[in-house]
Length: 388
Image (cartoon, rainbow, N blue to C red; front, side, top):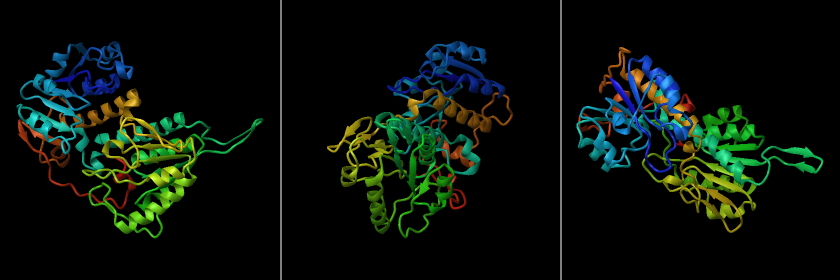
């Protein structure tokens, strides 16, 4: 079978669904691969590198006419129309948030698999694009904060005087939060972090951070691997903790999301007003309404007291080469699952819980939403991720 890798056309999308390294792996599974000319340029991957890896460089229509089409961003109506009958499209689709796209896909005799619908179970971890992108996003959030912040992160003693280390407060210790904690700690900052799950405290400490618990908070256990809305009593106690940390912090990074609902508002106007001029907040939930009062998606807002609130929604796309490598590797893991014979023949088994969970449309019929996939989240914090 032929795998097509078209160039991404959505504004601002810098990633590509395959890299030269993952093309080699796809070829090992028995597939032929055609990559649209220039598909990898925004991620610094040259056509010549794809050719060396065994791909054929072709036009857009050749890539879109593949038996299997690997894509990153949600396809446009025009792109959907280019798919051949019987094709399998693998992409980020956000089916829960875009029913119109699901209907447009079902209008064609195709199969569509959503990489952002991978269930949070152990056997699907190698396919988990959301965790891959959250890891990159958390790291990049710290880089953006450091760029905006007008001082060192690490403390120094110089001839010009002593410089204290920056104080960073991270809200949420899922994949994105842990990546932010590690990055900020490696830059020399004093890092504190809070999360609804006390069991992540050891992970926070292992990355150089200090875990600060909400006073008298009970353990919060999820049944499906995602964060839940908290009680009013918990939220009041958490607000007092956030207010105390905000007044002391130079940098705040928020990562809290609840699937299918607006992001919880955690940092209020009063907390922002308590921060020192020049402080920075990165709201990683800006696209879902924001954890921070005053944040605006894709903009930097400066408060009256000089606090910069960064609402970038494209943090993974700001590291395109790394994001493409992670995404491409997740796709290879999926293709390994769908190619049991390693013979270049894709086989979809809807009795498999992973494949059923990501199947949005199957042969022109809507299969979304899938049955729920409950998981036990208590033993491992890595299975629970409130930050994506």
